[in-house]
Length: 212
Image (cartoon, rainbow, N blue to C red; front, top):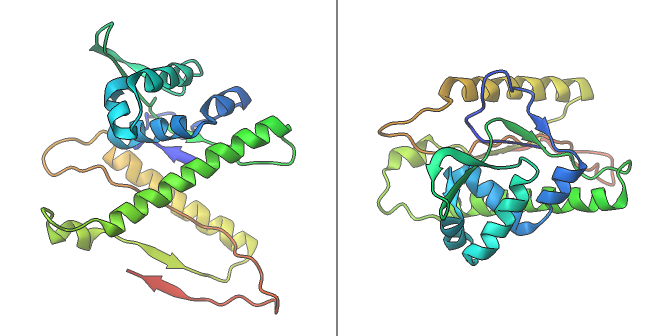
């Protein structure tokens, strides 16, 4: 899986694949949450993160230092003081290796924690959006959103081709809107999920499509 901050720098399209040490440093539910929040909400301090995650600033400060030690996050240049440090996600794509049989048991366990937490947070973010009331919002933002689930019958080559097409569309959008600020701009969650489904006992798969 990969995770994109949304403000990727030119020349870093391939992103960074986390090595074993960085993966183990991230393998803590609270650290994954902090890492995700820095991508979602931008630079934060230990105190502001403590408020968001319901922990003490001492706890978030400890985890921030652990993440920074492996270059997963960094201090914001020219911002903050010795008593209040601001932290941000480095620009660019982060590739998180999933659990693999070739990994050592400890690395596999770390990968399971990280990927499991990322997808749990993704689910929570989606459900929070679906359950959010429309009070104080305009209908235009709701109408512009898209949540789609489709089941397709594809060959392996077609699956890889579709993956490449979707990746190209997403990469083009990242490039087009990188660093955009100003009135009317909101942080938007962009997700793409494409994978084969288990084969049923009778060997068949149904092709269905739902859109909302």
